[in-house]
Length: 485
Ligand SMILES: [Zn+2]
Image 1 (cartoon, helix red, strand yellow):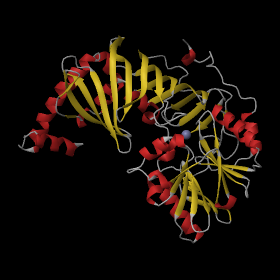
Image 2 (image 1 turned 180 degrees about the vertical axis):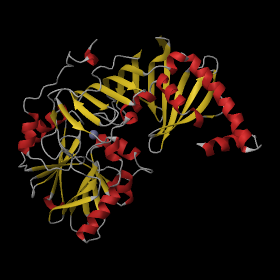
Image 3 (image 1 turned 90 degrees about the horizontal axis):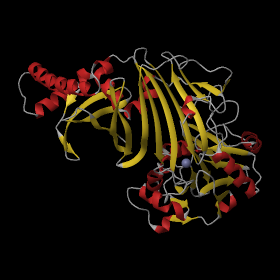
Image 4 (image 1 turned 135 degrees about the vertical axis):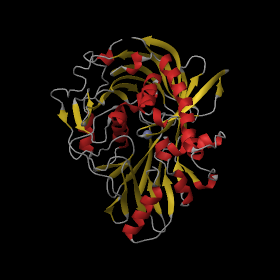
């Protein structure tokens, strides 16, 4: 950041000694920061030890809808407590979408992190949770908390050029945030209020956070409506927000009684290749796994997360063979699951997909694949002399989903429906899983095992039935404040 500051100063023509340069730059930034702080409540904001932010959101499922031609819109309510004084944060989320209803909470109590599922009444320790990883997402979508983050990083803030947004001149200021690319805020020159924040994601592109409908709570200003856009497309709309200054923190960071510990997860941080049978491999790391079947002169793969080439290389090395990737089965069109399609195209694979997914699959490639490299499944298909069967099923998750079944192993490979990395116990049911079970049972296949694109523990048909038995969509329990109104 210091280098940036000097470079930007030099670009403005201030080519005097670096000490006076940074002093000049600092004064400009201090004046703007003073204006922002005054607009957001002055001492009322500076002295606030904690804030509570309650949001009512609509989630626009860009690239994650059941049908790629019709965007799903889901309901989310969130309740964030951010305790600046003690560096603790708690975020509770209520989600209602086609996959069911979900009530989860992530808590970082200043020392350790925990995740709670308040519907299933389960808990799990999560060493990855920190003050910023729990609260950071909501803190970025809230103008008031952005000003607090700015104050914590004011020495590294750099003023940029003024820009005009919707006819109003805005001053810009860039500053760092822990665990994030740098943030640039757009400050209305007249009011000192934030109209927008932008940061750049190396993969997704520009992320914009837009603020409106400003209100005051105990002297602190906040935007009561906000929007979050990815590469210019709306992703989350905050249709209503409440901000509370110095909320009651009693019980917020205390573990609930009687919750069942989910236990440890399987470590998937290293690339692993499992030979399931002669010529059949399951490979991957972290959240992305694929299945590979040796079809004689080529391999067939399913599971399209980014990193496909590394998984394929690991399989060829483990197998001690070098054959091309002949066919890539596209399980479904969701943006994360077609993240590796560019790699598949480069590896020379033909794509096996359905008509409904061709547009998003082609759009994920740097140049479109010719028609003769795309095979469309109409209901079902069999590859490699019957070693691989493919079934087009409909679930809550995707109107068209290509289920991969290996009859010689009685094994299903699937994504986003039924898998787990838990060392013991079953994944918590949802409507995706329930509708998946119904669709799979209707196929009347002889299934012994399930492996997933995300979860690496092999599960059974009995597990699927046990996990989903008696599932109903829960309403938001009135015992939780987030469920009120
Ligand atoms: Zn999906």
